[in-house]
Amino acid sequence: MVRPRMYRLLYWLVLQRLPAEGTHRVSFAMLRALAAVPGVAALLRRLLAPRDPALRVRALGRELPGPLGLAAGFDKDARGVRALLALGFGFVEVGTVTAEAQPGNPRPRLFRLPRDRALVNRLGFNNGGAEAAARRLARPGARGGAEAVVGVNIGKTKRVAEAEALADYAASAGRLAPLADYLVVNVSSPNTPGLRDLQAADKLRPLLAAVRAACDLASPLRRVPLLVKIAPDLADEDVDAVADLAIELGLDGVIATNTTIARTGLATPAAFVERLGAGGLSGAPLKARALAVLRRLRARAGGRLTLIAVGGIETADDAWERIRAGATLVQGYTGFIYGGPGWPRRLQRELAAKVRAAGLASIEQAIGADAQS
Ligand SMILES: Cc1cc2nc3c(=O)[nH]c(=O)nc-3n(C[C@H](O)[C@H](O)[C@H](O)COP(=O)(O)O)c2cc1C
Image (cartoon, rainbow, N blue to C red; front, top):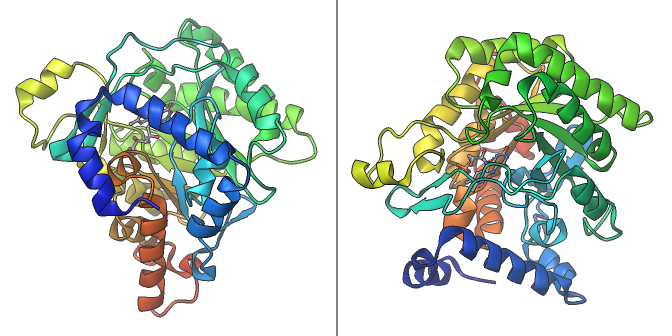
């Protein structure tokens, strides 16, 4: 196992000097190659997967070994689910997948802000399309076991006009819902023009209804849980409106939040940040707003929605705070990039210690403990 100090050294000496997207591609390919060696994925799982009963969580009709998942965007094409679960994530969300394959924005499009423990990306849903992702997810052994929990996050194909967005999302949902433990409608990426406008209730209502119908048609015997992922840049009243709509439509939950277009409170010099250009900011600077949005959702919805918290989660303290604020599950992306391959195991081991220190037998007892409703 890579120890945190070793990874930090490797990161500061080598990785941070390489282009961010290339580093991601190479390290992910290496992880997959390692996990493909017979016996290695099983061994890693035995060493790294959460096994503490205090961390087990029932959510979205499944039982997860731990509450920390890998957020969408890392494995856009469902290439390495088994390898990622072997690192100890409780679940993995693949995507964003679009109905049609597309290349995304021109490079460079992913940047590190190490002083802020943050990233800026404008990848723009580069992915091989719903058909390719579905084929991969359907392969025997893709998940590494029947107990693996895999969410699928879908978005709009860039070339498709807003008027056709419904059919585009429904096509992805129809193809991928039967292979997903839960499906996420992503209307919050800042990198597809106009996408975030779909968060307005009058547009979101028919979209979510169409995706729900497509899921039910494609998976008539198993109702696939449906969630919507929202931006941290929504006004508070819009957050309330999404919560109301999710309840009205019988959605299962909300994922809060995606990356932000804001650039406030950064230690990185403003001129440098400006030169990077447009994109979504993730990591530590997102922490406060992502937590505020979560609190708002919980206050509005009480326990009627399953809330998945994401945005700036780096430590067990962060995860604990989100769970007590009402999140059933948490996710991270940037924390994993800066924390290295040992991050999911480390965070969840520390989280289990917190559960016990609070005198609880299960982390489920902490969900919403700090919430008013
Ligand atoms: C490089 C990168 C690519 C991402 N791609 C997606 C994506 O395709 N779909 C999505 O819903 N979120 C995507 N996200 C957002 C993350 O899933 C997450 O919501 C966000 O980064 C905040 O969490 P973090 O602070 O732990 O990174 C991406 C984030 C990063 C950094």
